[in-house]
Image (cartoon, rainbow, N blue to C red; front, side):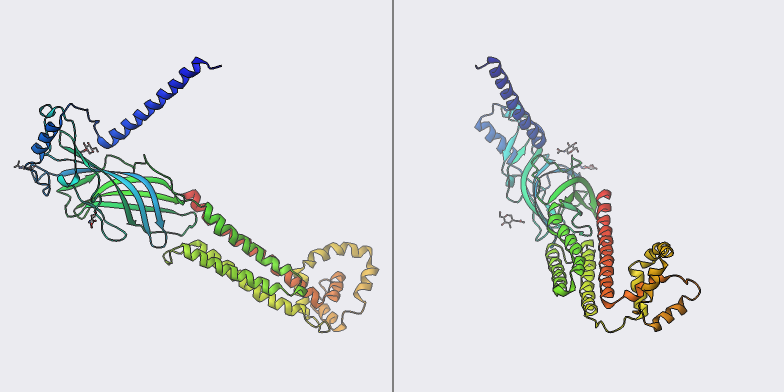
Length: 453
Ligand SMILES: *[C@@H]1O[C@H](CO)[C@@H](O)[C@H](O)[C@H]1NC(C)=O
Ligand SMILES: *[C@@H]1O[C@H](CO)[C@@H](O)[C@H](O)[C@H]1NC(C)=O
Ligand SMILES: *[C@@H]1O[C@H](CO)[C@@H](O)[C@H](O)[C@H]1NC(C)=O
């Protein structure tokens, strides 16, 4: 059953796999070590001789330039491993990265032939002069990068390569205007404190932060990075700018959608029949839920007024709507309990007539009134309309509309119950429109920010 061709294919695959490993290893070495060290046949005593030759008269406290008025160029690369934490409230950005520093130490060069072909030498960092880099904007105390860390590799032409890992906590200003679709830009600025820009110049061979070992963060995605070197007031600075974009799924599910739904639920309370007697307490509950959400959001966002997130404004408007629903419901239950024997004033009847869109219907019924004039006649003179109001109405409508007898029947029917129902219905429509409008504007602002970014 076993096909020898398969075996060949498998071994082929394996060799590809091994090749890939070698290539990866080479790539890392080239990237870190600049030159891949040719393994020479140097013995321990030859290496000892080399070490003695290099460090006998070496002083690691002095800038390693034979002519001290020259400029020492230090190349800095950052290999970002992960963004461990980005604390919105304090503005602390914690990240892990590998730094690779390279410079030329003019005292540390040798002839490979003399030392058994030794092509590189690894020594502890304390033996060699190193540029002491620190963050310009650290979160807590200033820290020296690479304090007490990895070995240093020296090449025969004097190139020194220092590769070390570091956990950095930097200060980063934070802008939540478009939360949860916000993007932040954080800049790590490194400098060799104590040296000025005519002594040490920081530079970088890359234009971007390297991501060979990068592990994606759950909350933030890295969209872009820029590496640039410049000088601020006579000190040479290298800046690593990280553009971070929040992954919005969690806040969308946890905050935005529930808040929109809660606001959408609120105005339906108006349609609950008044006799159930739970309308006001229900509206109060929704109102309180908004303040709970206010609390949740302020726990997750900086309490800075500069600038305030649009989410707060949206929530505030929803709270205002919710508060006014409570007040209007209290008024509504008063209307529902109004004594039936008390007459409805004419202007309220007129308002109800407009709100129930009766003027549209009256035009339609006008066509039918011609067909059945008797019925309408009967309805309008069935005695329920007090003669006083009829007289008033006639004086208002005098001459303009003699035969609008359909509104007569409406004026006759209009009672406090109808007024209360009309009131509830108009509240519902008004709040539905307001909520939809506010939500549409809020989401529109967020959407505009997404498309711009
Ligand atoms: C050091 O370099 C400067 C400028 O590059 C030059 O003027 C000066 O002569 C040099 N000094 C020595 C001792 O070589
Ligand atoms: C360097 O590290 C040592 C311990 O490893 C620590 O005591 C010291 O404070 C550190 N120095 C700086 C400047 O971070
Ligand atoms: C620093 O980087 C530049 C390229 O940007 C390169 O020409 C130079 O040799 C590097 N210096 C060292 C010491 O590796």
